[in-house]
Each structure stands twice: as structure tokens, then as C-alpha cells.
Image (cartoon, rainbow, N blue to C red; front, side, top):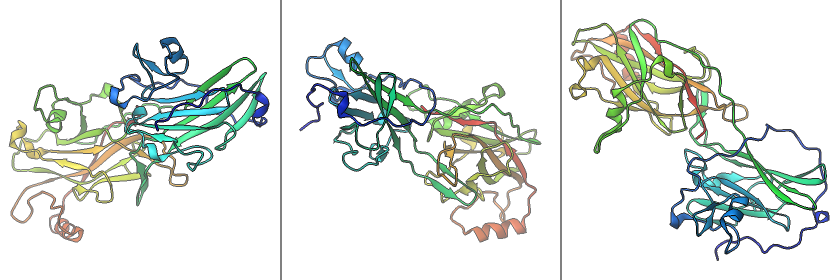
Length: 388
């Protein structure tokens, strides 16, 4: 049977556990979700008792369309009169979407801390305020019960750093009981953004990020992205996890159609210094780094691009990520800078100046020894991970 709130009964404060000395956490910030109430009819989970009106629906933090009260696309916290937490988590709370089966509470994710019901887009939890690691504290004439919801995330480990592209969501939530009132509070934790830092590419090779958008039917975003670019005033550029980042590297001031730009190694760091740690590989010997679950995708640049010298350009797209602390495995919410080692090559039968990504790496190394190239490192401006 579908989940529904337990029947309310008279609450007695003496039924609940005693206080503890609370640990401090960040000042409250409202949980904000764009288009919170834009939930398709077939996906709606009813909120409140039958017959609840719009005013009552708003009081319990739900959405009302004139006829139905339902949960919105966020994490909704409610407190029942008989000392129960009700927590309803929407998959669309974050971008990328929250993995509902990765949610845990202070007391873990086993019963009674597991979801009591699931839909495709919502997970529903209901448990006593005495359970699941809940902490109690006295504030004036009220008793406050506090817990924390968090989601797990997958970490990619590389030789010089670790990253994630999964949403990491943390929410402190409380029920406050007094002799006269019951109140719910949800506090989402955000990280503060670092100060902007400018970084420009050296010599006559430039790395820039495309920001063009498809505006016509049948348009291909991978082509449209390179119709316009972020300028100096646009940095730091902000991206959410897994959002595409369109990268272009080009030679400047050359008009020889018989030379080609070659990308050797492309990687990301959390500082403007290309040799700093941590690092995450994007391209190795011009080919996608194979130990990344979300492979970097090279984008061909040929005569159909409309460029006068297409061989002077290289393009690729990566999925946005954030670095992870190697000790705690906690997302660092740091800035990302993209770097590429570049060289100029004259195509020939022996060296076509194109990576052959099916070859063994030793073959590539042998070719580089036979046809040595002078390499120049070029870097992007700052790209910030932000929470949707």
C-alpha cells in the first residue's frame, strides 16, 4: 500500500530522550530548489491528510495546485505530533540527480533508518526522533531533535589525485517540540566559493572554453558550443557536476596550412600552477584517459568547421568534476584549471600528427623519439564547481 503519514496522536515531551551538548554547525540557510513545485502529475507523492487546503499545505512545506497537496522537488522535512521525523527526498534536489539509494542518516541506512517507500523520483523516510542516531538538545523551553542526511558518491582515483562527478548532498534537519508548538527546520550545507584567479596561456597558443548554445532545431551542441567563447570578464566560469566543458586549443599568428597543432597531455589541477597537485588526466598522448569513467571526448575539427586553418585547432569535451581529499574522500568543492601540453607538427607519411588511440603507449613514445617536438603548456582560466 502507498505510504501515508501515521495518524496523529497527542504528543507528550516526556516521551522523548533527554538533551545532549550540541555540536555547532554552519548558520542556517534556506533549502532552495528552482521550480520546486514543477512535478508531473504521475510523479506526485501526496502530502498531508486528505482535504488539506493551500494554507495548511504551505505550513508543512509542500506544494498546492488548487486541488492537491504534494511534495516538491527538494528534501522536505516534517515533524509529527507523536514524535516522528518524516523526510521526503526528491531525485531532482540536485544536478546531477541525487542517487536515492545512496542516502544515509547518522544512524546508517538500515531499518528503521531506511526508506519506508520509494517511487521513481522520491524516497520517503519515517522514523522516531529517538532513532537513527538523532541527537537531542534543550533550547529554552523547547527540546530539539537533530539528525543529518547525506548521500554517497563515487570517487575516481588517479595516480596524482582523486575526483568525483556525483552530487554530494548534506542536510541537517531538526524537529523542535515545546508544550505549545512543533516546528521543522532543514539546513543545507554549502561551501564558500574561492576568490577569482586569472590564468592565461603562454606564447602563441591559446586555450579557451566554448559557451555557444543550440538555438535551432536539429542543431548539434558539440558544434554550436564553439560558436562563442567565455571572455576574460566571464571568469571564473561556473559549472555543475557532469555538465559538459567544451575546450578548444588553437595556434595564434600562423598562416601555414601545412602544419598541425598536436595535443600531448591534457590535465586538470586545483590551482593555476600546471605542475601542482592534485592532478587529474584528461588526455594522455592525445587520447582519452582510460581510467576515467566519463571519458574525455575529442571533437574532430575539419573543413566543415568553417575555419580557415582547421589543423591549427584541437577541441575536446569533458564532464565537470570536483577534486576529492585523498585522506577523507570528501569533495573539496575547489576550482579547476585545465592545462594542455601542445606542439606544432608537419604531417608526413611517417608522422600524420594525429594520435592513434588504439596503439600501445610504447608505440607513441617511440614515434615521439623519432620525431621530437618542442612542447608548450597552455592553461585555461578558472572553472568553479557549483551546486545546482
